Length: 296
Image 1 (cartoon, rainbow, N blue to C red):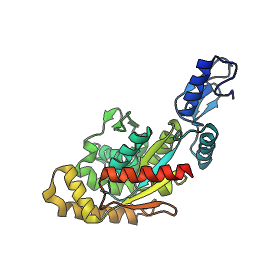
Image 2 (cartoon, one colour):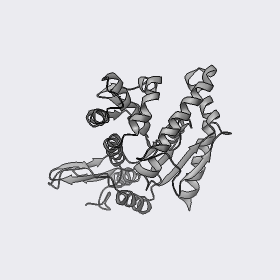
Image 3 (cartoon, helix red, strand yellow):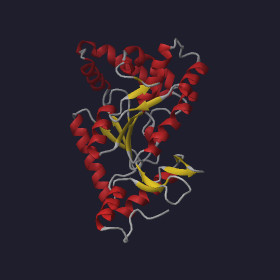
Image 4 (spheres, rainbow, N blue to C red):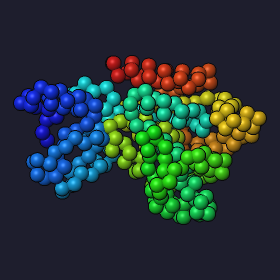
C-alpha cells in the first residue's frame, strides 16, 4: 500500500495527507488499477479489497491491535479507538456513552437499542417472545441502521421513541436472552466497529462478549433505587419509582441469569459506582481515566 503522504508532493498536499491520516482516514486503492485510489472515511484497517471492491474487514482482536499500532505510529489520539460501557438497566449508559462519544469525536453505538429494535419489530409483527425461532428470524431479517446522532432505524423507519416504550421495556430482556438473536445481532455490532474510525459502545455485554479487546472498558453501576429514580425522571413519572424499581429488578434477574452473554463485571473492567455523580461527573471521570491511561 502507498504511504499516506509523500515527500514529493507539494507542501500543502502533504500537510493535508498527514492531517487526514491522523484523523483516521486512509488513502487506499479502490480497485486493481493503480490510479483508483481515494480517501476512505472509516478509520485505520477498516476495509479490505476483495477483487475490485472494498469490503468491511471482518472484526477480530487482531484488527484492534493493528489499530493501536497505527495510533502509536502516527501519533493519533482516538482514531480507531473503541470504548465499551457496560452496566445494568437505568445506570445511565446511553446518556454517558453519547456524551463521551461527542466529547471525543467518536461514533456512538447503542447496542441495547438494537435489541430494543428487534423487540419492537416483534411487537409490530405480533411475534411472541416464546417463539424463539420466529424471534431469531426477525433479528436476522430486520435491517438496522444508525444516523449521525446514533439514533436507530428499522428498515429505514425511525425507532425512536417507540423503542423506549413500556411494552418494549418488558419484552427486550426475554428477546435479548435468546442465543440465536444475539448470534444475529453481534456481527452487526462488529460491522459498525469495522466501518468507523472509532466508537463508544454501550450495552450489557459489550465489555465481555462484543468488544472484550476494547481499548477502554467501564462498568457503570448504581443502587436499584437510584437507577429507578433516574428512569422515573427520564419518563417524567416520579410517582412511579417503586413500580419502576420492581421492573428493573426483573430485568436485572433476566440479564444476569441468562446462559448466553449474561450481565457481569468482567476481569479488567473498570467498575464505576455512580450514585453520587451526575451525568457530567461520570463523563469527566471517564475522560480523566482515558486521558491518564493514554498518556502512560
